[in-house]
Length: 282
Image (cartoon, rainbow, N blue to C red; front, side):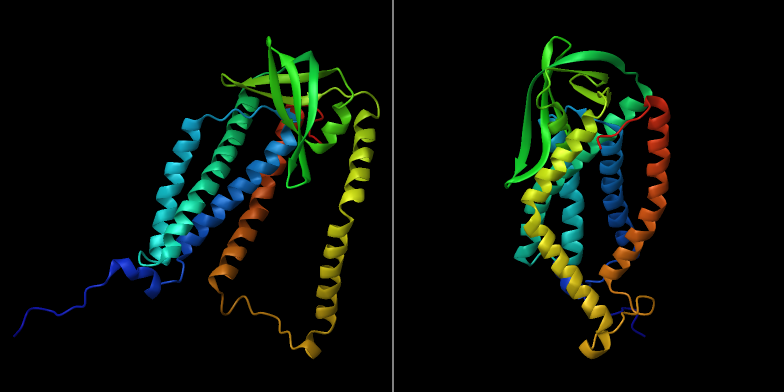
């Protein structure tokens, strides 16, 4: 009797062509990373009026190495080594995601220092206020102010640009995050100063975003019409609970985690609110 069993060797360089279905563990991992970045951005935006963002090259390189290893694993596993798109995804994804991860980890560090540290109330001289523009879009502001015998460049909101653009100083609660970074949890605004700034910002937004509003309104109108005319248009309600695609499963996992993490946001915001009083950029 032949004790040897014949088997066909599997080509690991072509795994992606044979097995494209993402495992549940991988979906949960990717969903958790996405939720972490989203929650980190929201909490950071809520808890700080402005902050400096001095991230070293070494930190970006460290994030790049981590992203490269994880991204290479997923690309090889689900696409395969024989496809050019694998290497394109690895290169472009590493460049983009390493920056994104670095910024998110920096936000986590800010929250850590704010939670365990203390702030002091001081008046700071404002040297300059500038808009942050990205492809003609107004996405934020830089506030240049003197503190600790040097000029600091704070990243802040669009509303704060209008609140501080004509000011020469501001009274703020400031703390230190490590050796080179600072954060402001509260600016002591004059009566109606922030409200007037919001009015100016929304006037700017409506004057420059009407095209976007029309496009969004058109999309919504089409979707509403499709819902009411779904039988005539042949649109069927997808059955998410019988046959889930990988994308649908990711969205469901993402949604479930978001619902849970919203509670984390509320707890974090409540803690910062009790610790620092009325805070937030908006």
